[in-house]
Figure 1 (cartoon, rainbow, N blue to C red):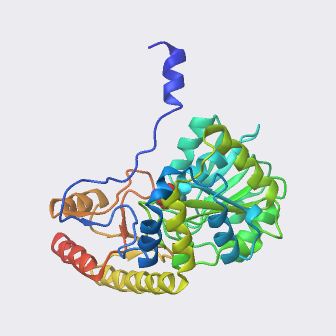
Figure 2: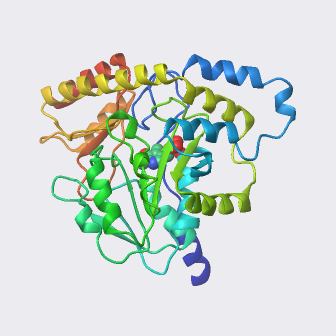
Length: 352
Ligand code: PMP
């Protein structure tokens, strides 16, 4: 291959997603799905739309969904952008809002899709190391940059940045877009959505994949002041003028409307996380404080890679990253109580 082609292909190195094996009876705790089903209202809304509805194109504005999301966060529909999962919203964000002459900043360690998007869109970046306790320190994000992006809580650490620290990040970067990727915020954090009216440089990205149990429907959204949202709309319309299919819109509207169900499952996951943490600690694991639907844990006497392999041999899947600083950690999704008990049983034998 010529240098030209090899450079081109190298810039398009794909993200490696967590495994989605097609095997039954796995205890699947590797991709942070919600262990509980979506609200029954979601299925009813999708069913209601499957008749003659499917003959018709969807609303290109996805207006009903934007309105439902805007209401929940006390914003206007013009301050909401929707896409096929937050991964697509992130992709459009890198293309529309983070492409500048200066490098963008994101934490090292973080969601590994970020460098992939940078490669895809030719965005220069500078990873900013986490502190000794694997936390993000906003003071490290001062100075000229082409934008800032970080998950809150961070992935895969699960550590939360309090809202005041998010505000500090925004104040330190008045001339850059600051993107807060809140895929896991509902499991223990305060959303920066409340800061949108105050900060023209803030974009908050969320998903229905985690706290609304709809990873399979592929719906994500961004919240920001109208000029940022308009930038995202322009990029999206250049690819596909229909952001979401009819069934995704119908299901997502119903999910946003069922606040009581959302609250129940959210609390169940949080309670499950506390039990899982206690169980891991009683086996000698160090568990980082998590505000997400997963925990990040390491055992002082066992390597992460061998624990992940030992679990896999017993059909329990967790995520392990071969990456400096975190190679001894396992990222474990909070499953049902039965799944977590099975995980702990296998780990107890492996750590004995
Ligand atoms: N952001 C972070 C930090 C994530 O961990 C994930 C899930 N892998 C996403 C975004 C994307 O989620 P989705 O595309 O399902 O909305």
